Amino acid sequence: MILREDDTLHEECGVFGIYGDPEAAEKTYLGLYALQHRGQESAGIASSDNEIIHLHKGLGLVWSVFSDPDTMPMLQGNAAIGHNRYSTKGANDLVNAQPISIECKAGKIAVAHNGTLTNAQELRRGMQNKGSIFQTTSDSEIILHLIACSRETNIVDMLRDGLNKIVGAYCFVLLTPEKMIAVRDPNGFRPLSLGKVGDAFVVASESCAFDIIGAEYIRSISPGEIMVIDSRGISSTMLPPAPKKSFCIFEHIYFARPDSFVFGEKVDKVRRSLGRELAREVPVDADITIAVPDSGNTAALGYARESGIRYEIGLIRNHYVGRTFIAPHQNKRRLDVRVKLNPVSGVVRDKRVVLVDDSIVRGTTMRQIVQLLRSKGAKEVHVRISSPPIKHPCYYGIDISNKDELIAGSQSVADIQAYLEADSLAYLSIEGILKTVQEKNQYCTACFAGNYPTLIPQEFDKFSF
Ligand code: SF4
Image 1 (cartoon, rainbow, N blue to C red):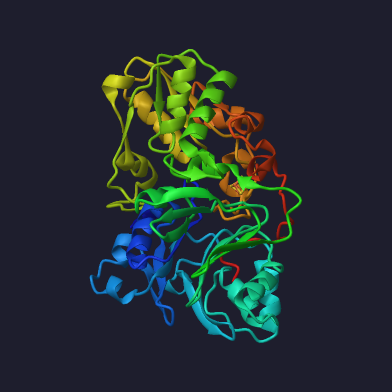
Image 2 (cartoon, rainbow, N blue to C red):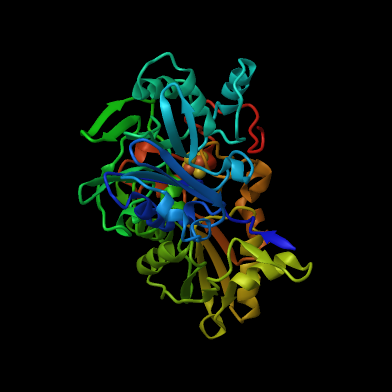
């Protein structure tokens, strides 16, 4: 039986692109490796040798998709784009792996997308009614159809024309034989940064992908910016601005790697501040602070520092357990957490424990962790969460499509505490998370407050196509 971990939030996707490097595909491979946490279902690279776009993609982790030594030499050229996918829209089939490549009147184009388009269903229906034939069930293909149908005559204007019709969250990296184009939606939901290595320019969802290839971080690509990189250098134009910027606060809380810069801020610094703010808002008398590894590590350090309650490593994570686990028998849920996490009994025995994590989705995993800590002799378990309760679905690229999947969608904090069998449970407030970032008014908090910054679809289903 193959079990999927279903009690965590799933990252959206990771995108990478490089222009002007003779080892463009190799560097893209390394960049995707650094961005593996953003998507594990499929990976792909498209490269350009100024005439042809070469493409290889497959299901699985980056190393397995490119494990055949004959693959990389085929990805020739000085420019390449890459993609790691987690499917927030469309099934996990090879046909939906990215980059997606087409040839139209604008020439050859490949695209990699991070985010989710909220008007994808109506756009697709409209285009199908006019005769368009889609290759995939992913919303990312829509931009290629819009480019192909544009009456403009050059690729940048055709792209702009298409972008003016779409709503939602997107960072696109496109490759043509001569250009690489990076775009971020006007709300700025997902992060996209610009870097440089030697004479080559690099773009990536997170700056950890720059470090692995020795590239230097230059800046965050602005919301609404269309950046064109070609033999003449960099040029940018802007899409019409959104009424309000809406950076995804969950990038800082959980998705992005702590060693990355996103939205122009160091993730590690923001995440520690979340822990500090949590300790200030909802203190508790206890002997030790422990994290749910790895997601709670950095916030737990901040909590311990602010509260003065000693940080200990009280749970050990088995790093060799992937996102799927082959279970030898039916007792799956209980086994699932024990395979992944084990308490250190010498650390937790007879202790009042503060247990810090970044979020609670269904609560099933947290309930088992609390039980495990008690079984190893913990005297009290106080759960502290470095984000507010997640009550609403996300339509912008995170896999929370149904309120029923969220324990806080229907239950009070007191009810959740009772379900977890914890001695106390407290979350950080929305005001608390916003204190930890510089541009407080430019963040999306819709999954906590329901205050969506764009029109949202009437029906939303990741398999709707
Ligand atoms: Fe991020 Fe939540 Fe907004 Fe989605 S709804 S973009 S997860 S803050």
